[in-house]
Length: 338
Ligand code: PEP
Ligand code: MN
Figure 1: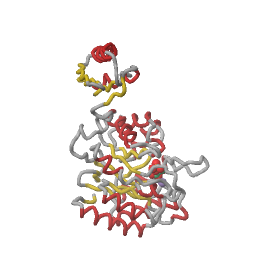
Figure 2: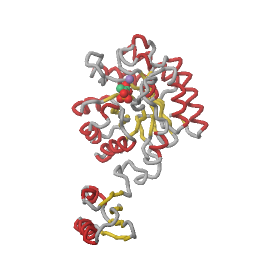
Figure 3: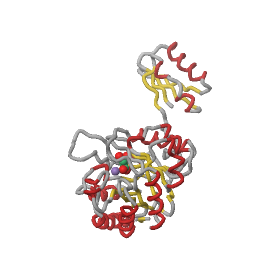
Figure 4: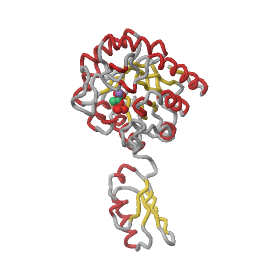
């Protein structure tokens, strides 16, 4: 860590900062310039990170050398991590195709959609049983009945399943059914929930919050990793913007930007990012081309009857066509689906 001092500091002021650093059990190396001085700090960075040194009047800024998301950082793990979800893999050379309806509505609905996406080559089945809805009057999900349907459908088609958990009190229940937890955009900074899934060993799909920076996302991942669960997959699903043309603003640059900082797999969700079936295929392909480790798409056989997110659902035949195109791009880049 480097402490940059303000211009024209006195010797007394410099000595005060040096003494503060040494009182924390760290070593201070002063470098006195004509206009500016800096102090290099050697030792356990966590001790100094907790000290509010920027509150000392002569300190201009404190610059950490290592990121605060230690376990999620590329420094912690130079090779890309591969997360296993049942018989599917996400990361490294493996690109996952995650698909399914927004919400689990019935056994028949899940069977129809699972059969279609499985035939198209999807590797993981999704479906919400506990839905985070903007309105309390909207369909909230089937709860445990939905988890049972999702589990049975996944088993019938030999596909691992992913479903959202919103409440720390539901982690234990959902863990009994699912292969992967999803933490949605609205809960990305629900730190109690992050800590709770961090105590399990189940993979976690962590979606980027609507106004979260990449650093915020990585800090949230750190909560899960520091709890002892190494199986975290990040998801770019669009952020809020001033433009109402699309549901959110799809940040495709986030994929390589996160990969430059972290070893964790990164997938994309063009369904929630754009909210428009006409934009989902091109944005999914852009995600695959940008190096995404998975493509997450909502599919429904009858969008006009869907109980949530119908207007953004792809039809099974549209998904089939898209999955083929994604596979071509993935293979072009020397990777494989599955
Ligand atoms: C979802 O996947 O259905 C969902 C609610 O996603 P998000 O949290 O990204 O809005
Ligand atoms: Mn949805």
